[in-house]
Length: 529
Image 1 (cartoon, rainbow, N blue to C red):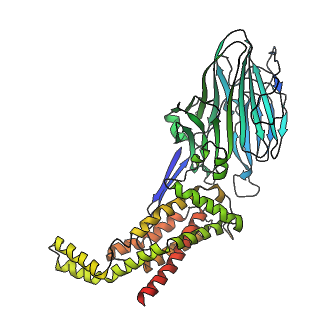
Image 2 (cartoon, rainbow, N blue to C red):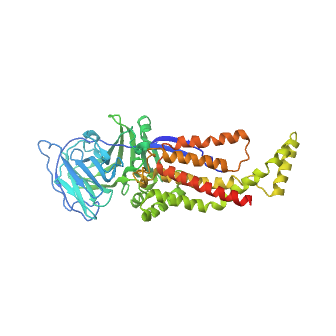
Image 3 (cartoon, helix red, strand yellow):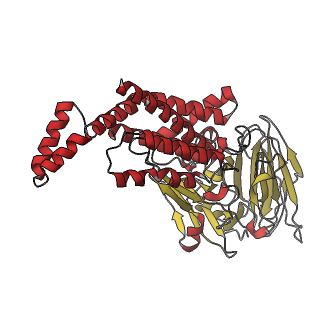
């Protein structure tokens, strides 16, 4: 997965605010070949159940030309090809590439090259080429709600082995069932290894920030792995222990193949002949006696990296939503954001409400921090006298300083420790806002029509920088004049840094600054009385 490391450390308002920022990027696709035919299409009540009766298929003297099968659900439209029984195109109906209402729908699978169709199948021991031509009786499907339907693609080898590749759809789900049924109708034992081929574009030009992340993602042996797609071109990866699922993810969307009953023995990601990536999902060797049938089942996912949707899959797909080191804090914050959205119907207002709540929760800590800094500031003249008096005796100066702190009941660390405690929360909220699909193309008001994109007129970053400067001037400081001047340069640095940040994140920071200024005015007033 491609990583873009963003900048770190935020200092402001009393001593500092700290932020470390990271960006990644990934995505991918697959191949297919030719052979023979048969057909069937059935409605189903269960996601991945085989047809009650499989048709007996005889190979034709000449292969049929490939054709397409269109599928439309409430959530996506897809084009399947009988060549490789793979996916030629899949687009999401509820998400667009741009915030424009007439923007093109997000495409998760797209290829004009049959060798790059998604989920082509190859089978060692059967001479099943990834581009083989399958047969199907289905021309198109359209379903909605809880309705379930399936497409069966059937291929038969000259040796008498039949492969039925079935896709099962539910009208209101991003999940698709996939079943590969292999029936040995020959008189001989067969050793078979079935591979699913998943292609992916290694290097994708960024569009609206979507491809800041372009990674191969896998959950195997109890741990999650994310690798930049472009890195895998030079350094292939393989997983062969307890593979639960694998796929590709960009910043907001992902595709995944989930194992059912150990159907994935290994996953290998490497450069294909096309120059892009190809993931080979292997079933491992299976021995099939004459007259025996085996079934390999999977669940597919094509959809947004929405926390609730990913968790509903029950396979740990939510691990692909990168919320950083403090994800234990970021996830609850994301749920709170969605909760307030239900009532406000505006994610910008929801961000403001969360910012106010966090500020209120930390008010006692920040109050103590600013008061401690104010007290330290008042002691500066006496501290300067002690430094001059004990300039040749460091130990004596330290003892005198400690005595001064005790006499005036001042803790020299009281100004920064409360701020440090808040850093995980600030960083977690940053991640939640930066990678939340909820903010993608979500309007706020006036000129801000997409909270995941930068402010087109840079108004909010400039106001944010101004409020940060006011903060710096109001905050008590024990620094020498040179250090103080360096600190005053931070608002300028942050303004330029935030110019291209998502406007949702800038709004959070701006509101936080305004609340901090109000809090500092209150503290300055009560400490001067």
